[in-house]
Image (cartoon, rainbow, N blue to C red; front, side, top):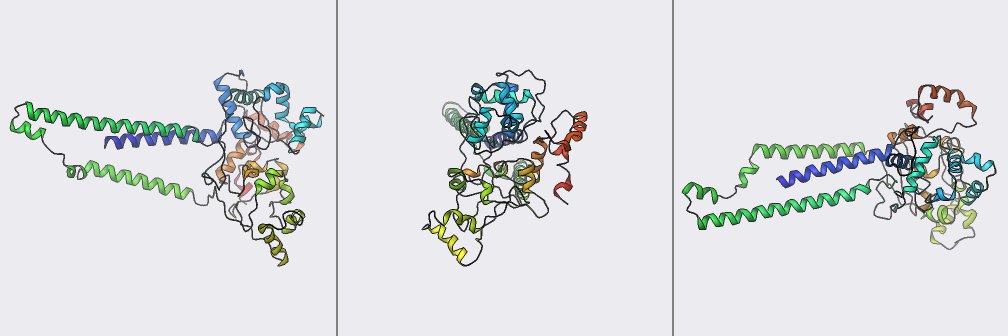
Amino acid sequence: MYTFLLALVVSFGAFAQASEQAEVAQKGVDPGATEGAEVTTGDPAVISAGEALFKNNCAVCHSAGSDVIVGPGLQGVTKKRSESWLISWTKNSQALIQSGDADAVAIYNEFNKQAMPSFAFSDDEIKSIFAYIDSGKGAVSAPVAGPEGAVAGENVGTDAVGAIGGYLDIVLVVLIIVLIVLVVTLLLITSLLKNYLNKNRQLNEYDAEVVNQRFDFSKVYKSNAVRTLVVLIFVVVLLDLTIEKTMGIGIQQGYAPKQPIAFSHKLHAGEHQIDCNYCHTTVYESKSASIPSANICMNCHSQVKTESAEIQKIYRAIERNEPIQWVRIHNLPDLAYFNHSQHTQVGGVECQTCHGPIQEMDVVYQYSPLTMGWCIDCHRETPLNTEGNGYYDKLVELHESSSKGAFTVSSNGGSECSKCHY
């Protein structure tokens, strides 16, 4: 019983620590948290602040190692570029490109002319991000498996808590083993003492009865304290499962339905680097990203892999004048309004921000939870690029007079109910 109780306490402690770590990883720190701080490369506080900023703003497109995601890996970038150049690039990469900077133009062209969004970070915040990269803490990243792999239904974002989960599991297993060894040792000592007393001591009737008494399990399960504890544990577990299932209604993170045609984004968007806008033609212009019609497929496949069994399915759909019955993966409730063009065209949000590493998916799955809390957190943490847009001048001025934080989407009303719920 003592072993069970201690293991239960340790398990709840591990769960609480993992939950706290997940919350910190998800929310990070508010922009401006390191404003005015003395930035030194080895300062743990600066590295920690830079890690939070990197994970919440940069990790979607960049790794802290050498891996290429959407943009280049950032390992060793401070040795290739000057500090002033990196600050200018982070704050407004397009301005640097338009100025004709050779390095900026080369990077822009090398990575398919994908515009990097501007960030309203202070110089100190940008320095803290590169201090984190130089520290090497994020240089080794865990592989992300798709739905074909073992972790397809899990949260495969860069902020997962697996880094501490394995360590806690090991500690828990070691503690349980130690407790089992202690219990066995105590039982052996009790048995030896009982044999010694029976053979070498003259015990009176009462002492003999105490030494040789048998443990009565019926007294344990008939005890009111034990029954109360069992009922309490049962109620707590049942309540936890109920809350978990209730809060998970409508959340389809990891959902990866089988499609009528085995289309691979890894092959098309990854290996062949076909722009998303080529197939999803209205992603920058409309509320919906649009489902590609069969004639778009035929632009290539009238000549490429024409004998493939999967391509033949496209031919049959065209011959019958029927649309391909693609299965929708990302689906918001009807009560929520979402506009693709507002995010992609106006906000400069990359596809991978919401859809994850889509260029690595053979089978597309829902990468993000797409919950209201997830959207609001993004609105609270994402700075608006207001440079050169007179519409925001007065709003930014009013914001700066009353707040020290960055001018985010929420600062512009992005957390008001009526923005998404008419």
